[in-house]
Length: 398
Ligand code: AMP
Ligand code: MG
Image 1: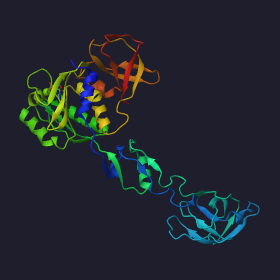
Image 2: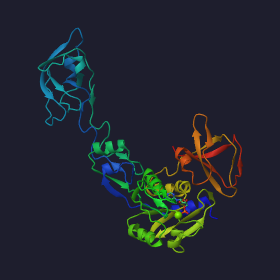
Image 3: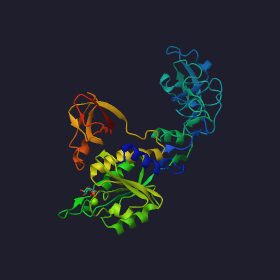
Image 4: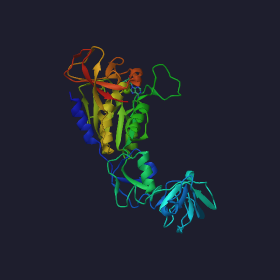
């Protein structure tokens, strides 16, 4: 049997990053920057007012108080967006709005709240220091500075900065394009009435969501039944457009194992991994596209995705945090685990008491428990029994 760590290494070795791509900034959200961004502009680009008020010379209002206000004629009106920048003559004021360019010669801004708000003349009731309420050119970003680094995840704030710098595009590591294929003649889609013996398809829906949640893109998520010809034709049709193919089902020891029948022996290797759930696994390539064949039981499929696929997928998209956060927590109950296999149980981690409780049975078809778990409880290969009160390893899925 192959160890969990060995299979993780093999899968990680198959999935590789796509070349960096320059994309419109709105498409870059959630991707990882593949190049540094150097500001070509300063921010602010020009001296401007931080308040709605009056641009004046500091000396002209030095004596202003509530009891001895200073009156000045208002010579200009400067709304935000005015592009001809006037010059302030001594002994006058310019009415100015937040973000509007500061007139040449002005040395301070008096907020409207310290005045009578006059349009033709203004009464100023408070003196201001030189430079007050002025945003200086370059005080946020000075042109030529590296403001974003390769490896940073594009967040709304990153997009805001890029947009403020006038960038229409960003260079990123593209998303991995994933084909998710569900096998099983028993499967039907939601909306179709069930015949006896049929079940609703769930792995494809779940894994497609897991791929997107990991930052990837799903190009298609077809069902193929257990027909080798249909399955092979589906892979052939999509392989060239996919960076990764995920399949579920058809890899265990029974008959009608469509994935095994179609792909083995050949460029895909089918192995038993010392893990519970998720023992039957496979991986390799189909027409040069990496393929990971996950087991069919829904819990096995999602746990296998978490353990083998998600870290490799995220690494290939440039994320620094490829793994779920690991922590230890105090176990609230006695548990057993098959010796020689690594067991992943569904758990509920309580951060307040720093404890974890196994959630639902360890068997691999209990979706209900998986849906309300917030962690995976990892019991290693050497562990057969764990007593309540022990500290155990937890993968935080929150
Ligand atoms: P298999 O490995 O194909 O024998 O599948 C193992 C179990 O998982 C069977 O009970 C299947 O019906 C179930 N299963 C396989 N694929 C899916 C799927 N896409 N959605 C829901 N259940 C599935
Ligand atoms: Mg099947």
